[in-house]
Image (cartoon, rainbow, N blue to C red; front, side, top):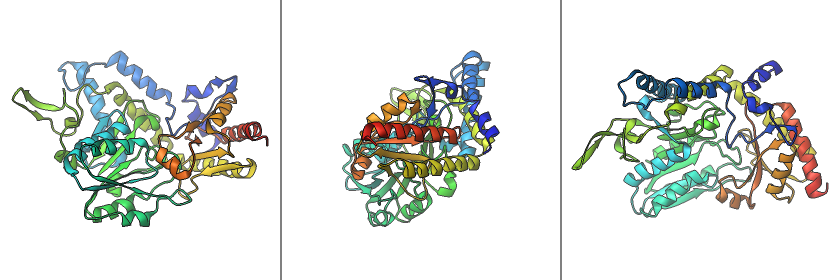
Length: 410
């Protein structure tokens, strides 16, 4: 990507022009949330100012317009991930709610005492805790796939975990800590041969690579708008139609019903069966502008740019930062670098980097079991997006050198 293209991209993000402690902001917390281009915010403004009316319920014009905008988004998402039907696209508040929906609805219906499910040690808490909550009611066993020294899943151990009681596998497409890209298609195919259902947390994958749910053949796939340059509070659950039809509603209320009486209730068709209450129709309507942004650049171009930044920054850290420890060295990984500066505390590193204008994430990254497996309390995490530059990577490296000299007297 040439400099003119990159500057054009950056010009669409006003926040990138701000300063922190009188220094230009270098935003490297894209794994937590990406920034939002002006066109998305403009679309939100337009909805609030011109088409704000509740969806699916009004016969008047602006309600119909708002409904059309929301349903157009559903069709855009269907095409973006290559789902078979818009009925397979469920709007949620985020990846977390999408996984909770599957755990409560599918899991609460089809898991029974004595069954087994398989998770991995690299899961975000959002793909651990919902299953533990369900286990309080249904006495199934949770098995956990370990990782090797590079931060890759032990696929042989994964295969050996299956028994006749294995009902579900739920795992992340891309680790939010290690950046490891897991072999989803291979893992899914093996699980299906054993008769298990597959749920994938795609929050860290969809912003950085092409995802074709039919090619992967996953049963459920979840992701969030706010990690892919879109609005906050919008999530997507993809589910195969036959599975969704067999599942009971996750929540009750308006919109998800066909008929209600005190003698009983019948439920709406897909996808509305799982969308109780008023959705965030304003932000949902703005989400396609983020998809437009991604499509205009091209996912291949985004991936190549982020890979170049990852390789460049990693090489400089290893060669120029004495004592740096990088966690996650899989050859196939996303643009995430989790690290520690020797024995310095991750929080101290993050705070000092902030004083130098560099925004990174510190802590356990909602992945405490993974931290335990790595033998650390937490890490510093720098993560890249399409608007980051090599110059920002250089500023990050120079800031790291200063922080390292302070914390480790190097």
